[in-house]
Image (tube, rainbow, N blue to C red; front, side):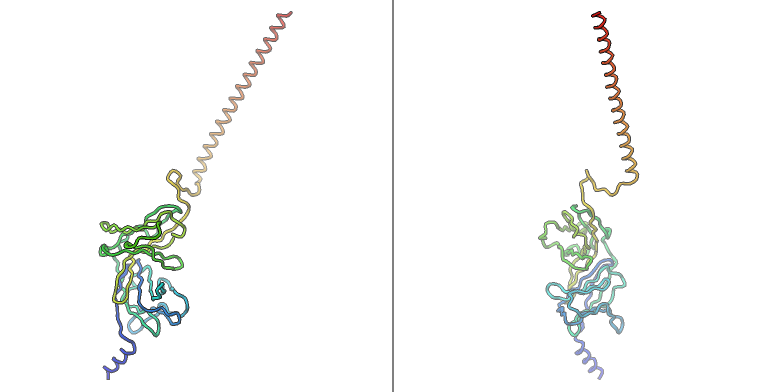
Length: 291
C-alpha cells in the first residue's frame, strides 16, 4: 500500500530533477530553462524549506517580465523562461523551484561561493565622450571559459552586450581577456549617456537541462559632464580660494594699468608745458629783435 501511494504521488508530480547552480557573493546568476513562457498561466519561483516552498514571486499577467527586490522572472526572444537573481548573498543559497503552474518546473540547488576575485570598485565614473576600460578580475577556474558581459538598466531590462568569442557589431565596444593576470575588460569609445548602466561579468555553465550564467562581478557606470583633454581638464565650480586668487590678479592688473595711464598722462602734460615755454621764449625773442 505504501509503495502504491509513493508511485501515485510520483505520477502526479512527475519526475523531479535537481541541478546545482553556482554563484558568487555579490554577483548574479541567470538560469535559462526550456519551459515555455505562457502569458495565460501563472509563473512563479519559490524557495524550498522542509515541507513547503515559500513564494518569492508568483504572478499571472501578459507582461514579459516581473521583478521583486533582487529577483526577476522574464522571457527571452525565444520565448523561454528565465530567472535572474542579482547581488547574491550567502543566505540566498538553497533549493528553489521555478516554472509555469500546471506545466513544467525545475528545482535547482543554488550554491553561493564567497571567493570573489573581482577587487575593483563597484561604481565607476566617466565623462561624456571619454574612452574608458571597465576591468574585473575573475576566478582562476574560469581561465579557459568563454566570458560574457551583459547590461542591466534601472528598469531591469537585461541586454547581452559582448563576449570573448563574438566580434561586436558596435565599433564602440570591445572585450579583452588577459588570462595571465585573470583580468576581463570591456572597452568603450566615446562614452554616451546611455552607457550609464550596470555591467555584469560572467561565464556560461550547464546543469542538466538548465543552463545558467554565473556573473562574478557587477559594476555600475555613472556618466556625467563632458570629457576634455588634460590641457583643458574638466572643472567643477570654482572654490572661494580660486575666486580670491582671481580677484587679486585682477586688482594688480588694474593698478598697473592706472599707473601706466597716469605716467603717460604726466609725460604728455610735461611735453605740452615744455612746448608752450619754448613757444613763448621764441615769441619774446622775435619781439625783441624787431624792436
